[in-house]
Structures are given as C-alpha cells and as structure tokens.
Image 1 (cartoon, rainbow, N blue to C red):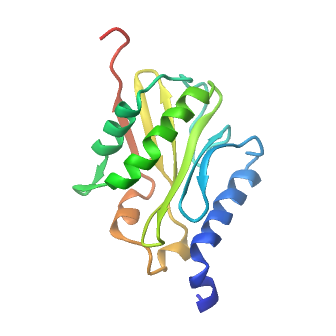
Image 2 (cartoon, rainbow, N blue to C red):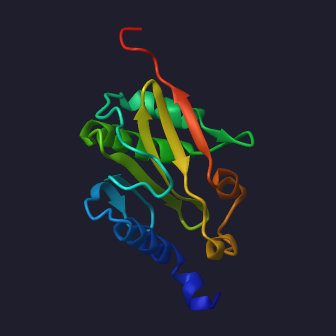
Length: 168
C-alpha cells in the first residue's frame, strides 16, 4: 500500500463503506448520526451479510439499556466498545431503534483515530433477541497497521442478546 493511501485511510474506508451500502441498493440509507473519520449510525434496508426483514422494529430501548448491551459485548475477554464509544454512540443507537421500521435495521461504523477500528456492523431485533453483527475487514484493511486484535476478533462475529419479555 502506498504512503498516500495510508495517510488517507480513515477517509478511504468511510467512503468504501458508504459506496458499499449504496451499491447494494441501500440508496434509502438514512443517516442518524455521522462524524466523518470517526463514526456513524444509519438506517438501511439492505444487509451486507444476510439479515432478513421482518424485524421487530421500532423498539423502545433506554439509553441505559443500550449502554448495558454495548458494555456486555466482549471478544476474547476484551471489551468490544470503549467507555467513550459507549457514551457517544448509545444514545444515537437508541434514537435509531425508535426511528427504524420492520424492514430496516441499524448499520454503524466506529473508528477512533485510525488506531482502534470497528469496520462496521448491523443491529436488529427478531423476536426476543437483539443481534449485533460485525462485518469482516477487507483484505487490504487487514494489511493496515491500524488493524488491532479487536477488529480481527470481531470479524464476522454475531452476538445474540436475549431481551426481557414485555411486562417483566
């Protein structure tokens, strides 16, 4: 990889993520929150892996519940999300769950100074389960010095979180 691409890597991957969503027919992507080179939360109707509607959306989560779910996710005994990521993104994910519909899911990417990266993922609810899927990094991305063990561990990982039944 040449030096000019290394220096522009965060911008490059955000552009690739957006292009991938639109090329898969996700032209109806709705941005809930985005800070370029840092992170974004979107509503989408096309999955990059195999999530199939009908989802049980919208769903009322509190920001505290989303924070709790994010805090509980770990890979090889390491937290998936930093405390700062949870603080910043939990409220935006909560907002996305309130705005999404049965045909849409939440997609996201999070990047912290091109050192800690989550290339992206999808979140949705089916039945009494909340699913968090993490996209695999691309082959080019795996050669990047920015890839850490967290990203490698999360590649193609699907977390299934049981939700409390209504009224419990």
